[in-house]
Image 1: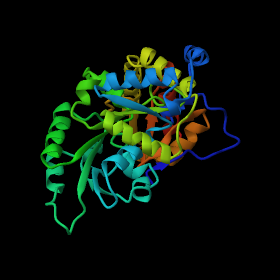
Image 2: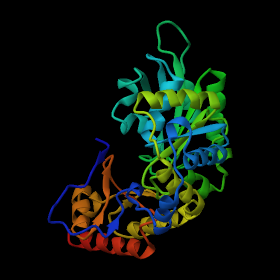
Image 3: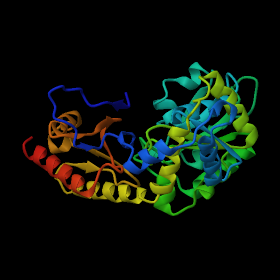
Image 4: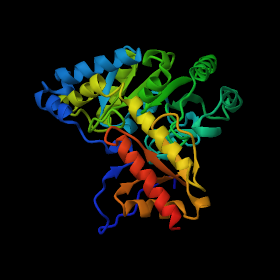
Length: 355
């Protein structure tokens, strides 16, 4: 199992420092005010002005023709592959990708697709690995229809795909008749860190989406973008999988507020992640992967305490983190400040000393 939630302990103190995930963010006061003021209508018939404004904003942000508002990023991934593929088709993605590890087998269960798992360090495969995975189109093998990347690569450590690699993957895909899909849950973390505008980062990708309920701090939602024809087809699958969200402008207003106020501040989360990694690395026996964005993966076994024991000990001190792929993951976000980072480092040092 790649992700293990922290154990539920009814006697544990309240959580004061929440490093479990950036999905733990709470709407800010300004965001709540924007939601309360939102104009709404029926999204089903295109009559919600706030949802429409959000979709236009996201399409422009990602350099695409159109976008659709979704309840979740997982639904973006699933509907995208349902449009790109037919039953029996093959999707190519990294072995730790969200579509493989975290979506309940939806792509196989709903679409009848198989996903070929490409290997590579830090949650990324190379263009050369993709080339080697391609096979001739014959009656004996499934059609290879889509290549998918996850920007940033979560289980890989929040790593950022280099623009040159993304461009080369697009070239390989086009030359071999494959569509391209970008799981952009934390895409804006990548654009802020590397200073590359989102349209450039997403250029050449047939479908791409961003999540609002992670680092951007909205309570719910994601938006999937692509060509108008693609989004029309996505809407049909959205209908099949549950339909519209009706007066969703209340939620969409939070997303617009996030785009206005919470994008550039993602750099603060990255700075806090670097500070956390730096402090942890100074504790004897702690092995830390250098963070590129807002995810910090580390191991404590060599310090004399297994990861799950460290997570439990921190929870007793009001700090919550996750075990993921055999490592501890800490995720910084807008509800975690620099002083809480230093407090967490102090607790880890204290626990190691007592081990």
